[in-house]
Length: 376
Image (cartoon, rainbow, N blue to C red; front, side, top):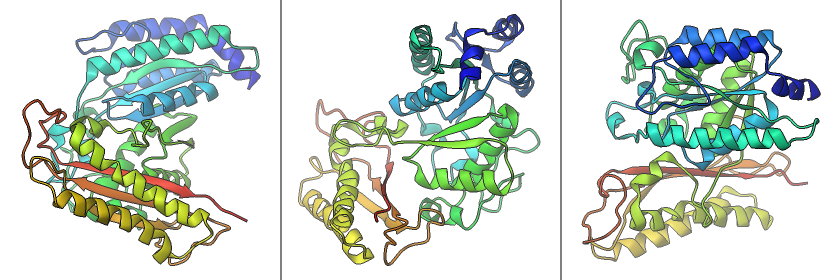
């Protein structure tokens, strides 16, 4: 740990020069960051990575699709505690959107993202100045924001189930849960992550627990394909009432947000049953379903201008390593309790109602999970 601290406080002249050169040569968007370069192509990232490696510095990598929120920032803060330098990618990956999913509707908030990252880098710099000699506090050293052509150089990216391309497929994990409704999603996630890992060669990569299936697939990919990076999982960031942070929450608006909290409440009800000592699937998932069924019935009884309808896509009780569904939880191993709600577009809106981005017409998929911890 002390070697990492030394690296933070004695950033070499060569590495500093490289960052300055990169910042002046990188192609930027409208907003120009001042404390880190924005790279659009692979050679620039690799050049910086080689220089950092020569100077015995470590890289923590946080892959994102932009529309940054506090959950993303918590990943960067965690990376800063364990590495001297942080790379952040911003790339809306087309191959994880199915042919019937609207890629164009994904929120793109470049200027707001850069502002948040600049502010966070200032926070990290202040923390580094106040840190003791035994504390590592790294900073954001680069943003990688490639185009689809850079990430998929030989063929246009395909979202067809049997589409052509160079893909990474992790089965059977990718076919379960989210994969049931989104058959190309995890193929796209694994492929883009493998590409990003190859480009940035990070010492550690950081993901949020909210996307639990993604974390399990990435860990399996790293293990099976001998990828030289450590996968770190950070606890889910939530609003005060428990709603898991997500870039897609901006589409909810007040009405759907209130009803969407049903997802977290259902999972908490199931968790309480497990904590009470019950381990059967019927008992644990029955508690969750009773919550979703009750709220849905209440919403269906309201008028179209008052209700927010949803569908419970799945509620799962699964093994923490294989995601195989469990009839009985082994208390020595625990389980993954997860669910997905599909929030339907609002049928009617009221004057002055806050309906979220898209005016309440964009369907929103909410996912969440809780880890049922092993108990002796």
